[in-house]
Image (cartoon, rainbow, N blue to C red; front, side):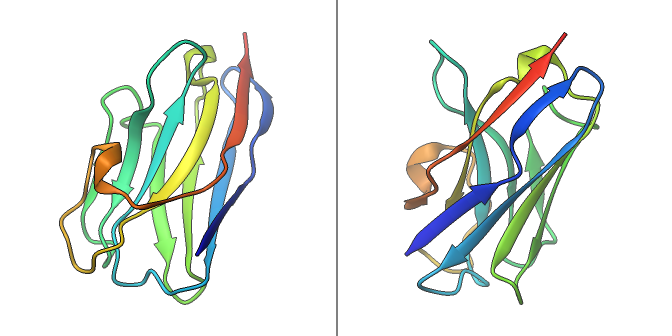
Length: 125
């Protein structure tokens, strides 16, 4: 099982980025998926999560109204559209997948079993 993130980079404050996470090795169409981030010296935190159907989503308060999580089960891919980026969004972003099927959306890292290697997002002021 492998999760591979892409789309990170350097952007100015107010700009946008779209992260993608492609899964291989098994299908995750029945699994909850999430995006987490970790800034230097800080703990990993939930950014957004989406249910297996895509009908239920969760967003951290810090990104509500700016970020959108979505998924394409046919492509085994989850996305994170990030708009109005702020310097405090700077972090390594990780996608994660739940091993179990048809579970509720998880907001804690321990609820996810598979992790990508991370992609760096840097927002300059």
